[in-house]
Structures are given as structure tokens and as C-alpha cells.
Length: 389
Image 1 (cartoon, rainbow, N blue to C red):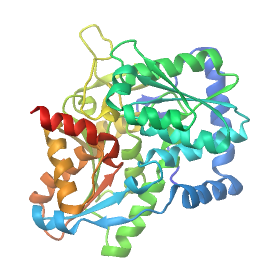
Image 2: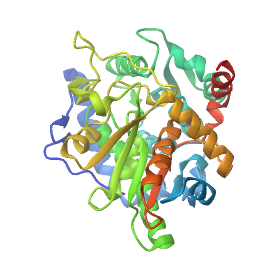
Image 3: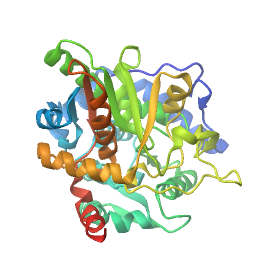
Image 4: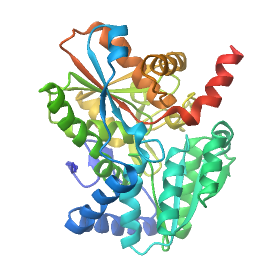
């Protein structure tokens, strides 16, 4: 697994840190201490790898999208198939690591936030398996557009709490989860789903998600005998992207490209600010408050982004571009029809940019697209959107 190197504790350049109440900081310090203790523990790593293989279904394939490549022309397009994981997305990687940590810390109550619902489903899944109480905070709007995932979470035994405050979206769900943690940190484990939040969460999430690039790097060398020209992943909070990038960050010849929704262009237009206990590039309104955002992909609907992505952007190591909702809708249909793979709307943003970029490159170039999730959760929403047009 990739470890995180920071200039000072919890920082990536000027971004990161922990800006939380004093009592909660004690809980964060204890969490960091336990994470450091167990992440290097051979028994913990062995158990984590066991569950990744036997429960999650890893390792998953790096699939050459031959039909899509032929239709688009230009670079070869490979898909890292996180959509094939149990529960249908990359979220289960991080959730499995954190639940094993929670178990060792003696937690009985687990809380989480979710946007598209995939992190909530993954959290409810592992809580069911390990017999822990599970509370999932989800924006009211997201509960409506991802009703199927709400039912899945409840079927798995979780209590889903619709958050009506604010816009009723992911930011508001994070607000509610952090509020719960402040009140209940002594007996509650906050299983945070993205590479955001106060230290040590971004470090932890990257560590557990880095299995994505650990596998893809080995797989592409086996298949092509060389590293890819670029690795492309959608970016909201940034967990799938940081996992997809992790083992390539020091490979300076490999382009790292994050694709965010043009309706929520945090990395393209954000400014340094503190949100949810950490410093990152953030979309702010005229009053200096986090700006309301909207994306057709609920999992990308966030006005902040992971601190390491903020640093990768500012330092120039990674590129961040945007794709519109319409771009994503077209890519959603294109991949479905050419490869028989229905991607999540989040992942469709990355597919859209890969199609655009492939046309500009030669047949000797290679693109790896992190297919962060499958589109089962989105088909009803897409059906409505296509039929309303």
C-alpha cells in the first residue's frame, strides 16, 4: 500500500491540517495513533488483504476497451474495473480498511456520510458483516434521486437519516455526520468516505484506496510492458482519483488527470479555504461561504476537494479538467453500447474526457480510466433525464 509523505503532519503543501474543536482533536489524535499502529502491522495487512480478495472480489481486471478504442481512434483505452467490486464501486476498499480499524478500536457504533449512496451501501454492508450499529447521513435531495441505494442501506440494517438542512446534498450530510461525531466521539467511529476531512482521514483513505493503482500499475506493465500515458479519474471529494493516482505520483512521465463536473469545478475555480475541518481549494460564494453546487452525479456534488488533490493541482503534478452533465450522459450511453459496461454517472465524467483525449493522441499512447463504479444506481435517473429531453 502507498504511504503518504507530508511536509508537516496532516499537510500536503499548504492544504490539509485539522481544524476541529479541542475535544474532537483528541479523538483525531487517537485515531491517527491507532491508524499508524495498525497500518504497518502484518496481521492487520493480512486480514485487510484477505477481505479484499474473499469478500470484495479483488483483484479486479484492467480491461482493454477494444471496441471503444476502435470507435474513438487514437490512444488505447483501458478500464480499471472498480465497478466489479462487491457493492459496485471503489468505496468498499476504504470501508473495509476502516471497519477493521474500528473493530480493533472497540467501536460498536459507526456513522458515515454519503452522496450517491455507494459509500453508504458499502458502510452498511461491512457493518452488517461485523455486527455494528450503522447510521448513514444523506442529503434529502440525494435520498430522492438515489432511492434505490437508500433501500439497499436499510435492507442491510442501517438507519438512513435524511438531512434537510442547506441544499440537502453531500456537503450537508458531511455537516450532520461531523455534528454527530462532535457529540458522540467517545463511542462512535466516523467512517469517512472520501479523501477529505481533518487529518488523518485523507491519509487513511489514500492508504486504503491505493490498492487501485497498486494493481493497475502492475497490470499495465504485464499487458503493455510500459506505463500509461495518462491515468484519468473523476474527482469530487477525490477518493477514487487519489487511489488511482497514488502509485503513479512519482512517475513523472505519467499524466494524472482528474475530471470534475463543470457545474462544481472546485479544482478549476476554487480558492484556499477551510471546510469540514481541513484546508483545501473550495468554491465560495460572495459571502465567503461554501458555494451551492449541483452535478447530475451525486457523488461529485461537493464544494471542496481532498487536500492532496489541491496540492497536486497547485504544484502542477496533476491536471484537472471539467466535463458537463451532457458530456457524462453521452459517455454513459457510449460505453454501455460499445462495451456492454454501464458506468456510474460519476465515472462517466472520466470516460467523457478519455474519449476526447484519446482522439488527440497516437495509437502508441495508453490511457487508464478508473471506472469507479457501475451505473445500476443511476439507470432510473438517466431514464428520466433522457425521456424528459
